[in-house]
Length: 212
Image (cartoon, rainbow, N blue to C red; front, side, top):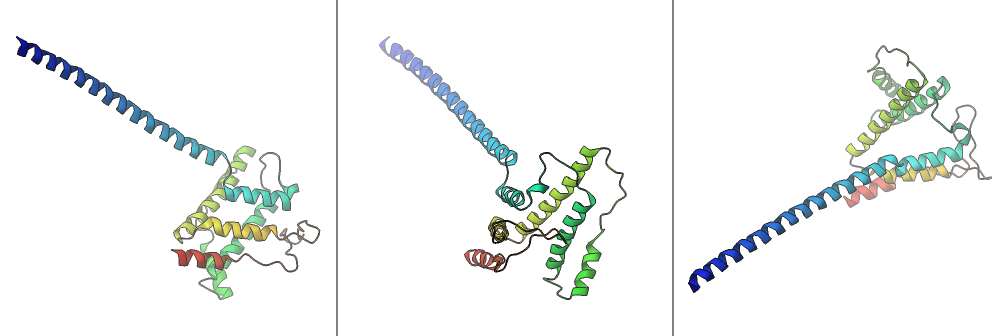
């Protein structure tokens, strides 16, 4: 009888232990799920904060633009007129020409290559229905230009922010002696003051090249 009682007690203890272990296992699994859920939510919040806010690059560009040409920065979205579009297209094409000349230094051949690259994706389009559509289409094109350029920098194996920062620091040094930026009327570009030095991109690329 004593052995039977001990056996029953052992079975009851084992059942209680198994229940406790199962309960702990469920709690641990729930804790793990909660932990994973918190991490996912934290990651989402970080991403949302990043994209709802301004990237370092955009913030620096915005700061530079508001200092150098505050009269051109509106309080709300506005459409670009022909003058504004011609300006940005000219500036982008100028940099594209500079890029082409890294592999084709001859001026005429470089321009020929530029012409060959232009108009490869031109389609017949209807004009936007209203001003909101127009502003949306214009800025969609501008964002695509930024993405293509950033994509190319990544494919070059270069850490782009260091280069961007170097360029923007040099841009901020284009102030004249009175501390203001002078805009040329001929092409709407900022005048470079006497003694201004261009950004030292080579120094940064060399450092990245040697470190990696």
